Length: 417
Image (cartoon, rainbow, N blue to C red):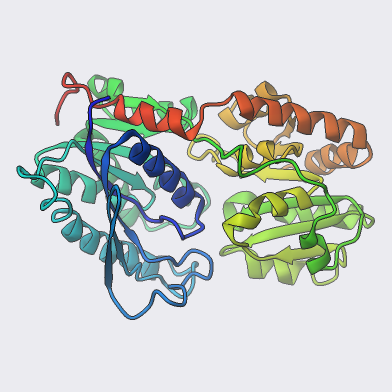
């Protein structure tokens, strides 16, 4: 394999615990194992508490040299409230500008000619796509644009963004980045159709599907009676779990309704996000609802094992703009899934292919409650579905496969912008 020199611009990287950070950290590790040189430009760790973690404060920019290249970490300018979209937008822009300036400089001393084979930029935030294009132009190289969630579609569909002028600007910026990218990587055929519909047909060949992966060695099935249960005061009752970002796009109020109907089941919402406080308030009179916080990455398998049944939910229309990476982790943990998502979406197809659970229509509390109730009452079926899900992800592409797929997008014949 030809040795490549890459610049990666991403919002999170280890030790940050954000799911996208885990994805990019694993890909970079595989590239390094292949002998490639990588220079990562990312944020200081901040995802867990939505502020820069202790031990990382005090400097806008921190640089470190690694055996495979370098990491440049930048202050994220995180807004105190996730619901303050104006402050968050300012933070994204400020971070992106500083990231762009740093990315134009990294790696220039490690090569006689300063050559870079590609810039890999991850979105969201969408602004990093523009940063990637700018850096690619300055370094006279190609841009691979990795789209984890299609923006601004997600925030528009949830109603979080309503200003028409802002939506128009974001939509223009999205299309601009797609057209200027040499390759656009998305996670599913649904997302590919979404992106292809927004660019001229001649650009459709640049849009590639490379699915996310899961660490099947680090996340393995474990006994359901975990130490985490004891920490949260949960006994041996069945636990229905939602783990991940607690936002308005997940319609998690339906889980509260299930908790009301099933008082002998514990509903555990584990994570953080803009909808967390409203869910806490709404659940004050429901004693079998518990809340847990994000845990260190080395406890992920334990946290997932705590749930007997996991829920993946997205409001209607969102399955075409997002594929929650958590679903692969749930399958790796050997737990069944109930997915409340758009019919015929990639998420529903994934659950069917894996034989790991069932799917119901989004935003339908009765359908979700009925599906959960059937699994709660059938431990043998829960076990069988969990085993089938685990077997599926063991056959799924690995981080190594995904890393190779990205490098495979860089033949000499790839058309430049």
